[in-house]
Amino acid sequence: MTDHNEGTPPLRIAGRPVAGYLRARVPSLTRRVVDRLRADLPVYAELPAEEVTGDIADIVQHNLRLFADVLERRAEADDHRFAVQRDSAAQRAEEGVPLDAILSAYLLGAEMGWNEISAGAEPSDLADLQETLAHLLAFQRRLVSEVSAAYLETSQVLDVQQHRDRHSLMAALLAGDPPPSYPAGARPSPLYVVMTLALGRHPDESRPGSRTRVAARRKIRRVQSTFDHFAGEPALTALDGSGGTALLPVGVPPAWEDLCALVARAARAADVPVTAAASVVEPGAVPAAVAQNTEIVELVTRTGRTPGLYRLSDVLLDYQLSRPGEALTALACLLRPLEPKPELLQTLETYLQQDLDRRRTATALHVHPNTVDYRIRRITQLIGLSPARAADLPRINAALIARRSIGP
Image 1 (tube, rainbow, N blue to C red):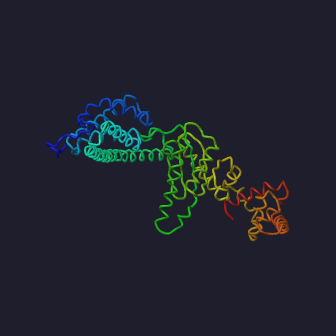
Image 2: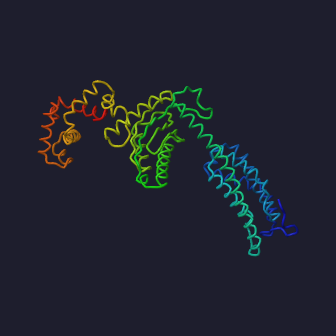
Image 3: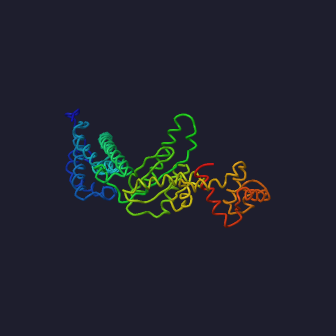
């Protein structure tokens, strides 16, 4: 510490030397600061008692004594005097204590220290009060800078390591690798919500320039944040602007309604439609779940269903009928006579979507109900099956599904 004020009278408030008074009050003031930390900051209340009364109390004492030295010499402290605070900030980062809580703790200590040394001040103490306060503010600026830098440096290292571990764990799960190949720093969850997503395009992604990339990253980040909040920890994700895969660690299978609500929240957060398929499996079943979910999302998208969350039971008939084979081709061929007349295919699909209601079908197609009747009769003549006959409906539905599966 550099002394720029040798021979200068000590700072005095209420008739007492400020530095000496603060040193004498360090033990009792430390206890009161620690009590306030545990009462006012929940993060510190959750730390082990021996850590708060040990390491944390030591830091409080160190700060008070260091500030007493600053006041005695009326000069800033040298860099090496902040090594303890830097080490403490790094340790708190490793423990996951939020930076805002740490800085709040330092500010609380400064507030209580100021109240202690300024108590009983008289108007004649104004000059010394002002200088003492100036030293306190400079000391706090230095503390905040040193502590924040050490915390963020450690956090960055930890984030890189955790990101690498999560990426390695996800790669191992997607590949179906056995547990011994998992990264040492990452433990698999007992269960995962395996989710495959198709993300709609945000309007900002259609604008020229760098805004497209920014909008895509923002969309992905908001979806990721929604999943992290649901899981209570960072979810394992591989997402780009069009969608991808997410593995959400869970201890017990969530209710399907909760997963549907999760996808709805992700869609609102990203401000885009989200189509997804999900299943809850153990780590070893992740590859098969991803493969099946991918097929479900492709099927849902191809058949024009509304966005939202789907499972196999929601598309069971479509899924089965989308399997390749001679039967699938034969079913699709049933509708081939309608291909030269696109309006007939459109009428047939709309008629089925409207539960065979000719008036609602006419409204949806913007035609007269008599036109619908005529087209239904024409469809029956061409394919030999009538949507008005209950016995023919399953084959017509199956033919439409098969046609969508293999294309016209």
